[in-house]
Length: 65
Image (cartoon, rainbow, N blue to C red; front, side, top):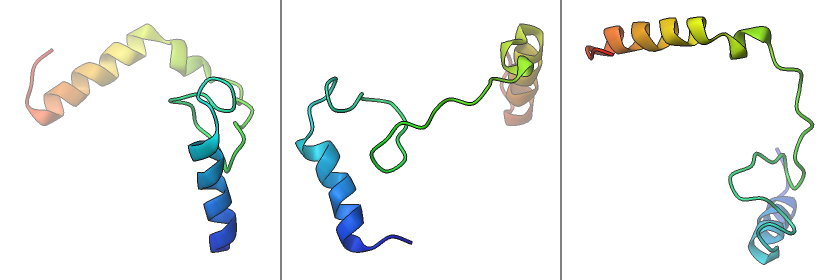
């Protein structure tokens, strides 16, 4: 848990900063920094697996794909 002053400082960073210069809209941040991306798993690029998951999800919620 962080102190209120530190939390306010993080908020102030984004409120007073300039989009596209000091920070990027839509990006993930930990406090005020973007974490380094970790190595992607091969499964994230498996289009067949993606389709299977999509179809199964649609089946579970009662829609069809």
